[in-house]
Length: 221
Image (cartoon, rainbow, N blue to C red):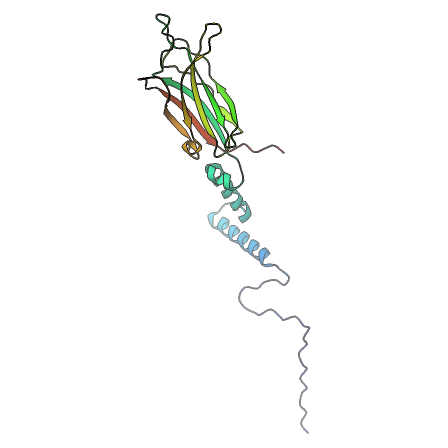
């Protein structure tokens, strides 16, 4: 009789052997590890082709750097990310102010300017008071730039100009006011003249201010 070889049934617990040909994925290697290894291999290849060292950063670091670049340049992105931008305010000068010292011949107003932060909650905070410029209806203060860490989107800035009075028991004369709403300087900042309201009958006066919108410095460890 002719002997027929017996065929063993397949073992259901056996692991399949990897197919030959093409790229092989090592057993037990995760997809993330494969992707990282492939990115590293590509970086090595590029480095070899360029004849230089490998300088490619891992994808996560690249994404982090790109996010930081966007946040540094876009105040709106800072707000969307939960950050609170910082504004820096400079009171520069005024022109065409009313003369409130007409009671004494040859005298002119001695102006100074104040800045008040009006919170959207209704609270008002005095922030800046410039020096007094004597006998000048076109004063140049160039008050140093000042940070407003308590400013938030929706808060407004009010500027009031006064004439410093040297007479005892006499209050300083009001020379007018100007206002910047949040949307006037956020997110692009502001560097221009503002028309002064309530400057006096027939008076056309202006106030020059600058507002810079910046990213708040990172807090220390």
